[in-house]
Length: 113
Length: 111
Image (cartoon, rainbow over all chains, first blue to last red; front, side, top):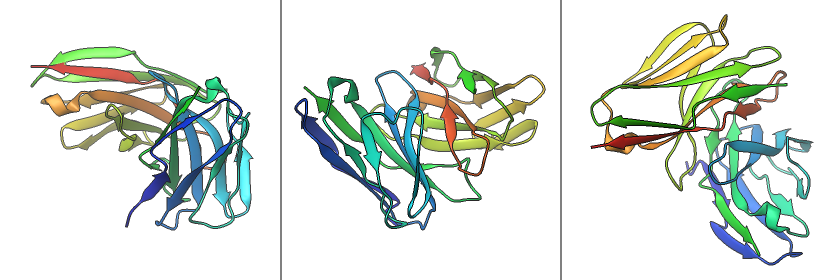
């Protein structure tokens, strides 16, 4: 199993550009999450999904959007990128029963200039 | 709301024992987890406490006291590779599996 995969690993965006961060998991996990992590800080939840077709906002959803059309994939869309979105983005997944143990992808390091 | 407090930095020497504390304020409690994150890497799960007491996994142990809203991670026989950030996290109420993370404690292990 590849676990949780994320692409790209790195990206530089200009202010106002848009992009989609890809996340996929092959563990058949229902629950998936997007976090951002600013330098020296903890993880802030952006959006989450409890199953295909079901998504909801986390703590910091502004400027982002998600979709979940399959169990495996959970892309994060940034519209009109701003310097405040410079961060490392992590995708994670877990099972219904094992919600205290989340499996993280390797992250996408995004810089907006 | 929910919040967690942990020290920002801890330093210890190789071979020593170090304890990283975590206090939490939650509306309902559903367990305390610990994650490790090496610089530039992804967080990885270390341990979970749903009930009071000590959970041991090799050199790492985690303790929980629900009455004190307090837990700690104990690392024994420290190795240089243990230099990393350590996060405590609590589950949010409801069946979403959401975790609320602390700000993290950076552990520096010195020779």
